[in-house]
Amino acid sequence: TDEKKAIEEGMRQALARRADYRAIAHQLAIQDANRAKAKSDRLPRLDFTVTGNLHGTDDTASSSNSEFWDLDTRDWAMGLSFELPIEGRAAAGAMHKADLERRRLEFQRRNLEDNLLLEVREAVRALRSTEKRIDAAKKAAALAQEQLDGEMNRREQGLRTTFHVLDAEKRRTEAGSNSIKAHIDYQLALQLFHKAGGLLLERNDVIVADEMSPRSARP
Image (cartoon, rainbow, N blue to C red; front, side, top):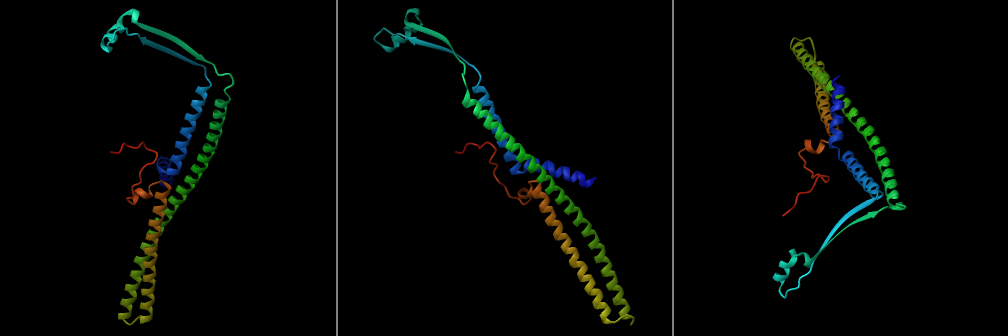
């Protein structure tokens, strides 16, 4: 249905644009990185090193440098360094902390998704309801105008009094007021829909810098 499609589109926009939802996703990525680092710290480490020394024997720097390529004026050393964590308590603690924080964030994200769905659904239903009210108010206003025209014609023929004309004018004014209120409520519902989808500022031409995007170098 159209309502279902509108809700799905609203949720798609919300998950992509809502700052609160994106902030949780950003924090989850940080915890994943922290856990990966802690896991890496628990693994054995093997390093390969190479060092070289230059022995110059001449009086000048240029002459000493030229002797670098002689086998008797340079030393080379290569080695391997192997580290095996014995307990790794710090890394294990960091992994446990990252896992706990990730579970907390996942729970928070699920709750937020439920709330977003509720917001979007209520906003869509409010839009549909006000659309029906606008249509009904338009028909009521047209009917009230038709009745007023009829009462005025009948008064000219002596079939109605001024009281009947004033009563018809009152009904036409009420119908017009109801139509205006329905349009106002529609705009309010539309703003709620944009807010639920994270589009409120954009729809109102407000530009906010994205704090989670890489910052460009400033001169």
